[in-house]
Amino acid sequence: MANLKITLVKSLIGRPETQRKTAKALGLKKLNSTVIRPDTMTIRGQIAKLAHLVQVEQVD
Image (cartoon, rainbow, N blue to C red; front, side, top):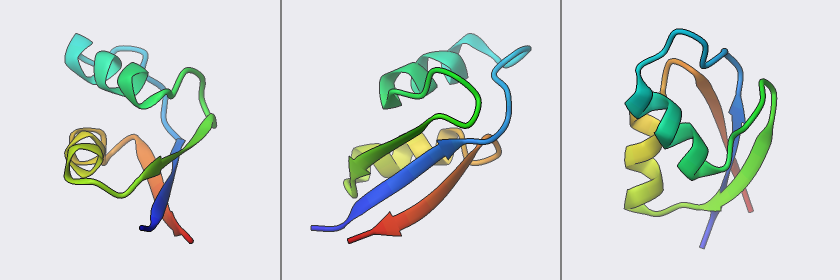
């Protein structure tokens, strides 16, 4: 199973509360923080909600 490397590249300041909670659920706390998560449909949905704030790379 592949993993995804997710990096927060834009600030959460001024964003709706739902986007802030989604970022927290992914484990993204500060700008340029990076987490590695499994490539599941749930994670893909969270990434889609934050697509304009994150950068995603596939990691094996």
